[in-house]
Figure 1 (cartoon, rainbow, N blue to C red):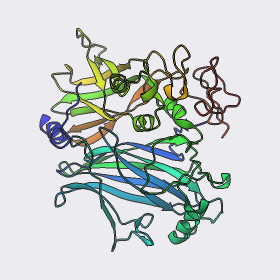
Figure 2 (cartoon, rainbow, N blue to C red):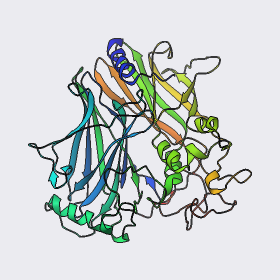
Figure 3 (cartoon, rainbow, N blue to C red):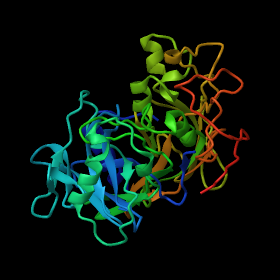
Figure 4 (cartoon, one colour):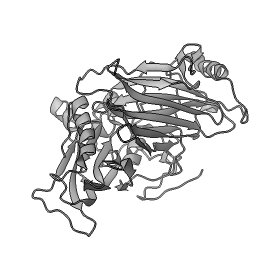
Length: 446
């Protein structure tokens, strides 16, 4: 039954107005002090996404910031703070409101504010529409969300309920409530957050849970507030830095399964690139410093795209031979490909995507120009996943990948200048101690 998948694709095309062509560590245990939810869907026609954030500590309250961004240009659409008591759970839903013609965030959970001094409740819920985008083809019907643990109260309170106003008073008393001010080390955030996104479609009365990427030791070090844009790993905010985060997310190859039949439905391969906005804002990182790094608009555009060739297999080791091979040019923050007969000749199988590496990294802002490149991962930082839409409803499929050369090492081992044997640049290359350079080596002193 292609009708269900076609319905999903029609909604994407109709509402998004674009159809794309074909130290710190990522914690496999799914807890951390930053969470990246790679997709939310809030389309007209009954699509909604319920977000859940859990404080797994039974002793410490914590304050986290939630940020919603658009799918194409990663424009910030909404942000607010979460005030989580020990063992607390916050939930909120992104959904389309037909009366408003907009996507809204709804929550009755008292871990968030409706207004200053008033926490959400069933009688007074948070019901906030997303901000309009500057690009009309980039809207809030699709996007991604991340959570940054802002600060954790070192006081042990046990599993008893901590009043939300007390958490508010404690956090807003830090640094005098000055945004961007350095936090005292005693309140640095702990790796205690986890959660999931429950993406539902009323059309099939089905849903599936998409887990976020859990980043350990993101280590926010400044006071952050709602209403002020907070990019991922922005310079001066996180001790690990943008380069470290991008190295952890770098992928050489990605292997994604698919269905392509009336019986099973059709699979959508999604690729989320959550650090583009940070790089273009700070003029630093993978999306800014690649290529020749020339001060012209053509070079700026080139650095915002990732290119991958695709090799399509069925379930019997057969593969489709195209000349030339299919190539996906991925220029939006979230890019997707649908398994359709016009692209995929088999009813079931998997696709191997091989990303084209960049040749070198420079940093014009720090005076790092040829022939003195920064040594780091040459493959794009991306979160891949699969959504299948079919007669059984919607569900996700397992993904696999080969990471970059510097994917895995201890959160406490920062790269020596990133660029040994080249020159260390203060303010660009993070301070380091005892970093091991062997690719694939991981130390875990936790």
